Structure formats: structure tokens, C-alpha cells
Length: 240
Image (cartoon, rainbow, N blue to C red; front, top):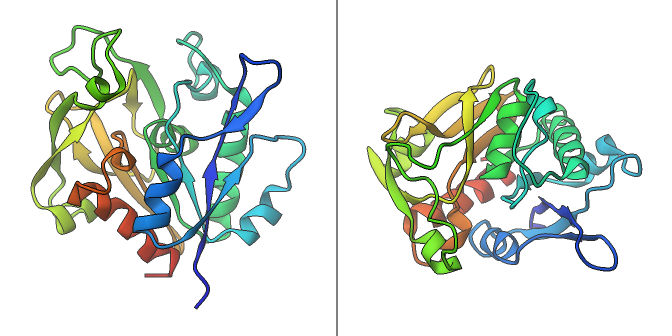
């Protein structure tokens, strides 16, 4: 049987002499290893991509995390904190819609979780630095310190995550934005101690949507709950 082909969203990054379409290595290695699939980068090329045709070639789509935030107008807000990546916004929203129309799964991590919430009509908020739960390490933290910032999440009884992982898990927390209003048709899968939605799912025809605010790709090789996220992706890529 041919291994499934997973599209992985890229950011359009600037700062050098030319723009670069890119994604951090761990977003590729984790699904390749734990979903047992082949991965291909999806560049942010609105205006030059046939979304329906591309969706026809992919078996699934993974929307990754990113340092950038979605443009606020896309979820009805007038202001928001950058940096922004409008080419990525257009790509992920359009291709995500094409994938669901084609009956194919879309999974999301961090920014990808936020993109899917917006795609389903939800809104986002910027988190205060002094909230009851710390969702991001202090400024100036090293990469390891950033991902060492953790908190528990309660898993919805009977949900996809709870069925596989139990009542609660501890997750890393590396985000400044969060769900404000949950998108229509999304089912809450996990909640932080302060009430923030940390994971959701949906079934759109034959297409499964599953997204988490945390970063399972960071520790998928050593954390069973993180490895499960990608194993589940591999299962649905194969129609399971």
C-alpha cells in the first residue's frame, strides 16, 4: 500500500534578501515518523495555486505553528498583534476548505488550531501576560525554556482525546493568542484550567478535523500523548 501523502503548511518568511517559504523541521519529522506518511511542503502561493487540484493530490493537511498571527480582519477584529503572514492566511483557509470539500482530514497545531477556529467562523483573542494560567514563558526564555512551560488540560469525557488518553494530560504552552469564540460545528476536546479551549474536533462528511493549541511535534519521540496525535493522523489518513 502506498504511504499517504501529507501536505504541511509553510510560512512566507522575510528578513533576508528574498522571501522564503519554510517550516520548522520538527513539523515534518513528527508526522513522517509517527503517522507513517510521506510529507510535502505546501508553499503560501495564493493566486498561483489551484486549491481543488492540490487537495485532490493530498491525502491530508497539517497546519503548523508559527511565530506569526492571523490578520485580525479575518475574524472580525479591528486590531491585533503581529507579525502577520497574509499569504499563509489565504493559503491555509483556502486549501483547508478545499480539503474538507474533498472529504480529507485537516489537523492543526497552535497557529493551525487558531486558523481552523477562524475557518469555522470563530474568533481569537490576545492573552494578557498576567492571566491565571501562564500560557507562554517570559520574554527572553531559551527554546528549551519556552517548551518547558506547561499546564494541565482536562479532556472532554467521551471525546476523541479522552477516549485515547484519559481524563487529563499535561501539555506545553507556547502561545500568545487563543480562541475567543469557538467556531460553529467544532466540539471541545480539551480545556485549560482558566477555561481556554485547548483542543477541538469536527467531522465534516468523511473528513476529520482535529486541532490542539499545544505542540505535540516538540516531544513526539518521548511523550506518548504527543505521539498519539500523529498516530491518530496516520490512522485517518488511511481512512480509519
